[in-house]
Image 1: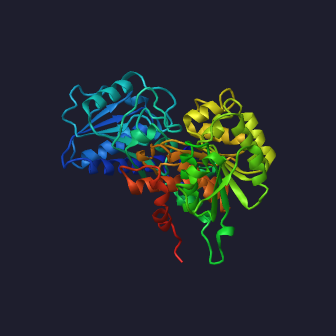
Image 2: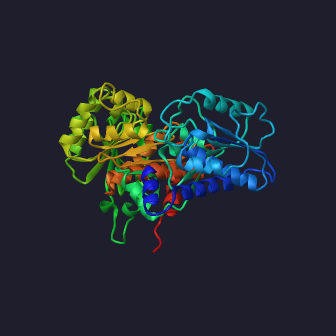
Image 3: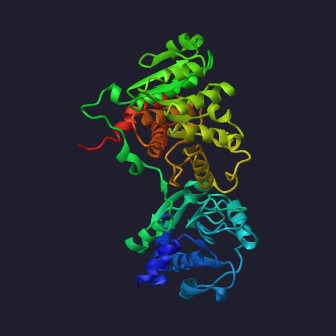
Length: 490
C-alpha cells in the first residue's frame, strides 16, 4: 500500500485527494449502519488512518449526524495529509473518550491501520476496553485497531468490528485468524489510486499472496474431454490402516473418486480387506501388508498418486511407506500419521521427497505442523503465512497449513489464504476428505499448488452448501453440485 500511495502521488494524484476518497468511503458505510440522525463517535489516531477518520467525521456531520471526535495525541503534532484533513474539521476535538457511551449508535475506529507493529497501550487500550464493554457496533478503518495487518494477530487488544472498510486491496490480516473474526464484513473501497499504482503495489509484494478462489486455479482444473476415459484420468492409491482403523482411508478414497480420478484403489492389510469391502463398491481393493508390498504395487506406473497417513498409525512402518512412495516418483499427499511419524525429523522427510523426484503436498493442522518442525529453522511465531512459506521451502513441497484460515504455500513463495469455508468442517474425518480431494486432482495431472488450492476451496464450498449437521461423509457426495457450479461455459 505504501507503494500504491507513492506511485499514485508520483503520477499526479495528491495525497489529500486519496485521503478524501478514503474518508468518503468510510462515511458512506457508516451511514448504512446509522439511523437518519444517529450519533457517532469517531476515534482518530496520530497518522493517516486518523486523517481518514477526520474526513469521515466531517462528511457525517455535513449529512446531519451528531459527531464526537476523539484524537489520540495533539492536533498540532499531525503531519502531512492527516494535518490537512484535521484542518478541515470544524468541530471540537476531544482528548479522551466520553464517559457515557450509551447515546452513541456507532463507533468509527480510525486509530491505527494495517501497519501496526506494537501492542496497544495507554488511551488506545482504554478506548478498546470501554467500547467493548459498552457493546457498541464498530466500523473499522483499514483494519480493527489492535489487529496486525500482516499476521492477523491481536496486539494486546483489538476492536471487534461489525464491518471493516479497507482500501484498494485486502490485507492478510483480514483473512487470517484471529483478524478474520475481528473484521466483520470487509468492504474494499476503490479510492482512485489507478491501475498503474495497483500494479506497482502488487509487483512490490512479490512473492505473491492470494485470496484463494477459482480465479487462481480454474485455468488448470482437469475437466475431462470427449476423448477422456478412466485410464487417462489418473489412478489414485490410498493406504489404509489395519482393521477397525480403516474409515479415514475410505473417506479419502471416495473424495478422490468424486473429484474426478478415473480409478481409486484402497491398499490395506489383508485382515482389513473385508471391512473395507463392506463399505466400498466403485473403489478397488488390494492387499498391502508392508513397505515391500507397496514397492511391488508401485511397479505399475499407472498408479500415479498416493495418499499416505490417515489412520495408518505412527512409526517406522509409516516412515518407510512414505519413503517407498516418494522413491517411486509418485505424486504424494502426506497427512496425519505420515507427518507425525517424522516428528522432529523434518530433514528426513524433506530428503525422501527430494530424492524421489516426486511432487508432494503436505496437509498438517497446527499440532502436526508444530511436531514436524520442532527444532527446525521454520519460525513458530512469525504468522501463519510466513510459517507456511518457510515450511514449503524447507520441505520442497506444497504446504497446506490447515485451520479456519488455511494457508497454501509453494516452495517458490506463492501463497494463498482460504476464507471460503465453514465452522461445520470441524468434524471427524473432514481432513481425510480434504486429502482425498487433493489426491484426486493430483492424479488427474493438476499442478500441486493449484491442486491444493482447489481442493481446499472445493472442501469449503461443500460445507457452505450443506450447513449445519455436516459430517465428513457428506462432503464427497456434494462434489457433483460443487463442480457443476464451476463448469466452464461452452
